[in-house]
Each structure stands twice: as C-alpha cells, then as structure tokens.
Image (cartoon, rainbow, N blue to C red; front, side, top):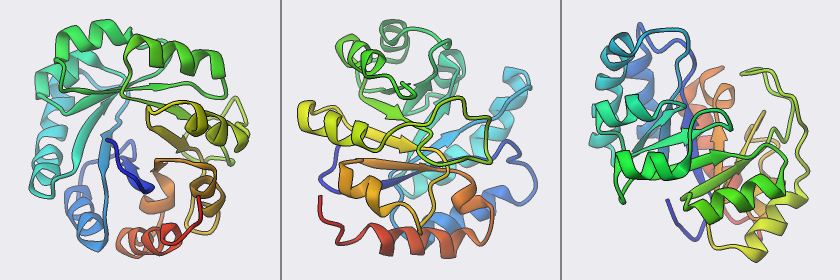
Length: 209
C-alpha cells in the first residue's frame, strides 16, 4: 500500500448483505480505489466468511487489496491481503507470523504519536490517525489534528491513513498534509457510491503536498 499520491481506502458499512456486492463493483468501476476493508460486527466467523467471500472476489477482479477489520483469524481463514488492527485486536508480530510477510498490517492509532511510533517499530505496513471530522460510522472518542499527518509523513516512510468523517468536500486539507490514503465509509456508501468515488478522485487530484 505504498504510492506517491493519496488514494482511496473504502471501508464497508456494517450491513454488506442485499445488493452491496453490486454497489461495491459499481464503486470500483467509478474511479481508482486502492483497498477495501471488510468491517462487520456481532456475527460469528462462519457467517462473516460467507459475507466476505463474494466481496473478496470483486476486490480481486478489480486489483483492490482486501483488508479484514479487527480479526487476524478471519483474515487468515479468508487468505485476505491484510488486517486492520485496533488497539485491542492483537499484536503486529502475531499478525505477521500468522498472515505472512506479504500481508498488509495496519494499526489504528487515533491521535497518538506514541502508538503510531510503536506500531511502526513493530513492523506495521501503515498507521491510521483519526477521526479528523465528526463521523456517523462509529462513536468517535478523539479528534485528531491534521498536523499529525504532516508530522508523520515528514519523519517516516510508513504510509499514513486518515479516517473519520471524510467527504469529497473536506478531504483536500488531509491530502495536502500528507495522507497517503483516505479511509472512507459513509462518505461513499451514504449516497450514490459511483458519484462519490468520482468526486473523491477529482478532489484529490492536483492537491499540493
């Protein structure tokens, strides 16, 4: 997940049943997307696998990295491209040992420079900061300062992901500050996903970094 320009990192809504697979394919067809995070809650692993497999296949068809939220075991069972770990979801070293050296392992660091540096030292492939803006996707306990992105990108080569309430209208400052990826959920799935992806592509293009 290394690239010179900022890229889109889509996060699934909690409900990926019904027509979501078609919406996912439509979003990928509308513009460049680097990664997709499978994020469901409150279901057992067997049910999660059944929901994930068709989405994982769509990601493979579109050359989009398929990342599992929270669960190292689910990521291993699916043969996912990687896992995104919260602070209570396990250690980077364990994820690396179980998923292999090619897996993309990300760590959510909220607004903490200390946690981000620890994640980097542990071998994480990316760190995420946020929420930068009020989010409707999950309860936000911290408000991250955009300056965190500049600080990280100036000091470290590990990619940094910005998350939390990001829309095409407010993303430019995050791109300018050095975000390598914008992690977006409701900003795409809350409306017309194809239009949103196209709008993000336009908004991220040509922003001076």
